[in-house]
Each structure stands twice: as C-alpha cells, then as structure tokens.
Image 1 (cartoon, helix red, strand yellow):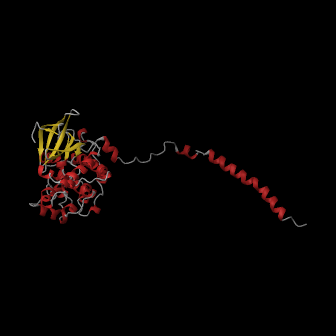
Image 2 (spheres, rainbow, N blue to C red):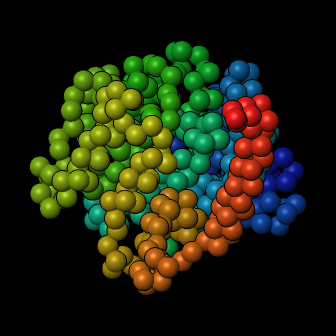
Image 3 (tube, one colour):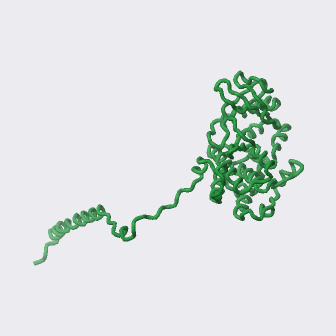
Length: 345
C-alpha cells in the first residue's frame, strides 16, 4: 500500500509515518467521520495466518475497550487487500525511543513523570485483565507537551500464534526489554510488564540498556542470569532510594517485583517530584487523581477546653431513662419476694 490508497473504501492513506519489522504506520483520513487517524497495516505474510487473524481480532477488540488518557485509543480494525490493519487515534509527537536517542539520557525530573504516565496507562489495562507483553519505548508516544500514551496492546500476544519457524523474528524483535520469564518462553503476567517498565526507566536515566549482547540468545541468558550494573555506578548523584526501586523492578523473580504497573506508579509518585518541575512535564490530572494517597486526618480546630466540655446530652438522657426504668422495678421485685417469703412473726 502507498500514499493515496483508499483502504476499505473509507480510510485515505496520506503519508507514511514509520515502518518496522511487522507493520507500516500511516497518517490517514477517515472519510466517514472526517478526521485524521493513524493506521497500522501489518505485513502481508503475517496477515495470511488464519489463527493470527482470529487472535488479532480478539486482541483488537480488547484494546478498543481500553479508554484512558495514557493509552492510544483504538477506533477500528479490519482486513483489506490481503492485509490486516488497525485504526488508532493520531498522536502528535514522537516515540520515546527516538527521544532517548536524541537526548542520550533524561534527568530524574524528566524521566519520572513520563514513566508514571506509562504506569497509569498500563496499570489501567492490568485492572481490565490485559497484559501488554511488549512494553518498550518504541510503543510509548510522547506529545510536544510531554503527555505519554502507550500503544500496541495485545499485538505481541497475537503474533505468538504464528508458526514457530516465523516466531523467532517477532519474539526477538525487541529482546532488550523482555522479562526473564518471557525470555524463558513462559507466559507473561502484569509483573512482566513491570520488569519491562524498569528496563525503560533504567535506559532513560543512564542512556544505556541494562543488558547488551550481539544475539537474541545471549540477551535471553543475561535477562535470566545476570544482574544489571547499579545505576549509581554510572551516576552517583542518583538517589539511593530510586536505585533501589529500579533494582527491585528488575528482579528475576516476578514475585520480587511490584505486582502491577499501578504499584510501581504509586511508589514513584511517593518518591516525589521537585516543586520546580516545568508545567509541560507535570503529570496529567487523571494520573495524579489515580495515584493520589488519601489525605491524613486533619486535627480538630476546636480548642482543647471546648472539646473537653462537649457533652452528648442525648446519651445522658437515655442513661437517665434506663436508670429510672430499672429503679422503678425495685419495689415490684420486693413485693414478689415478700409474697413468697413472708416475714416470720
């Protein structure tokens, strides 16, 4: 497909935005709703698999049900001219991987707000029962005002249905960010996404990945067996607390990490952000509201001497009534006693 192509008699492809090993992304115009969208058209050889087509539809439906400010909205999906496609909101800006290549590394004040936004979006999906399975900076779009949106939910799971001889090219498309359990071929969980978020945060802070190798097999071994170099060996100015958070997230065992992206997001929020964070890097109100801790109980504004004299008159009245009722029964019980036990004369 090329620019100008009319997809499914509805979407006019305008220009190519990017290409990868499995798909081409276009800016397009939805002629029915008269709006611009982004369309990811999968490679024809992937689209031929019947099993993949069905799984792709299932994952696209699940992704379309996700509505969150830090998730790219899925509008539509379909099959045309022998290729599967998925229609998404058009997000201005660029992907986080490109920003890392441009910047080298991010300061704490720049990295934490972006990662917390990623945690908010992925955490929302975790609460909906979905695991992303392919968390990496390539799948995080950053707008010019530093709002982050996560994309490509479920595509990795759909790709797992293709033939084993083809699977290697897909599964190892970005092995730098896979969790140890994914590298070992085990099913991913929310904790797997947390590990991948830790890899992204490590890369943002240091400018380099925790593990680098010349082959996918060696990368898998490093994820399974090796410990990453502590961040403070690169950057002594990084707070020790933040280093501990990152190392916990990169634990080999899923049970040793934070269980969901929401948990990691809350920890990073508690870690704190400087007051001088520029407005463009501050968290969206939705993220702050989602991760905000309940306020501590406020002390009473009433002076102590007033509080000590505050009498609950309703309780006092009820107590008096109970006393009168019980006291009124005393003569009755005395009469009963003397009826059956008359005094001896």
